[in-house]
Structure formats: structure tokens, C-alpha cells
Image 1 (spheres, one colour):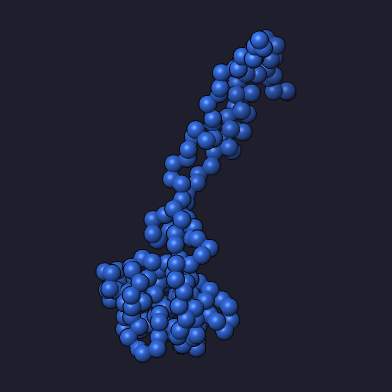
Image 2 (image 1 turned 180 degrees about the vertical axis):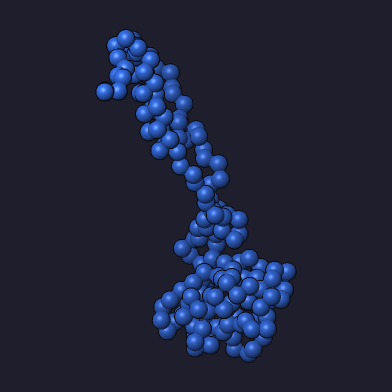
Length: 176
């Protein structure tokens, strides 16, 4: 016994239904879910000028241990995984590129604390920053710090620049 067949010529709705289902199936594959996790500062990306505002050379150390979980000078809680640093005079939330002069490795840190309070040192790195820079095992490293100037990103695109207004057609010049 053979199953009943549908004659598409007599009932064209079945063909339209099938095409519609295929179309919806293909269309559902075009949907994407985009989730961008914001950076700690709440911005999507940060861009800095190539020329630093100021440059300083000296010794860098790292701090952790008993300071973990305590408040920093700007009121944040010091967490092990944060890429931050302490400086005596730079404003809080300044971004600083720290370059290890021995290896050439560099990292960008955010100033959120005051210090170091040991003579001859210019910056105290968080534990995570020291590990990423490669100075954690040495404890102290000769570094160069470069204070960076942030370039603000365009928040709202200039739609006129993307779609310039169309000019009316010009009339041909009349010679006299």
C-alpha cells in the first residue's frame, strides 16, 4: 500500500506553505545575538595618542598581600586581577604605559592608588599588572612610564558625512 500523495497542481497552497517554511528556516539563521562586554571603565574601546604627555624612568615594584581587599586611595577595592598601579602625583584614572627596560615588554595600567612610599621607586604595580609585564618574579624592575592621552571615540556618527546632501542639478552656463 502506498501513502497518499498531494497533488500540488490541484492544491497550490501546499507549495506556498513549503516555500514559506523554507524561507523562515533560512531567515532564522541570519539572526545573531551580539553581546559586547564593556571594559572596566564602561567604554567599549580606548584609543591613545602616540605621543605621551610625560615620560619618567625609574624603579617599579608591585604590591599585594595585605592590601588585597582594602580600599585604594580613590575609593575602589584593591582586587588581585585588576591591571592598576599606584603613583605619587598622577591623577586618578590616568592611563600609563609601563615599559620594562630590560625586556621591552609593556602594559597599560590605570592609576587608582597613591605610592610607592619607598625611596627611588616611581610606580607600584598591582599583582596582575606585574605578572603580565613579567616583573613579578624579580620584584623590582627598571621601567619607563609614559602618561597617555586618550583620544575620545566618536559616539554618534555624523550621518551627513556618510550621506552628503544631493545638490540640485546645475544649469549650463550661458555665453554672451
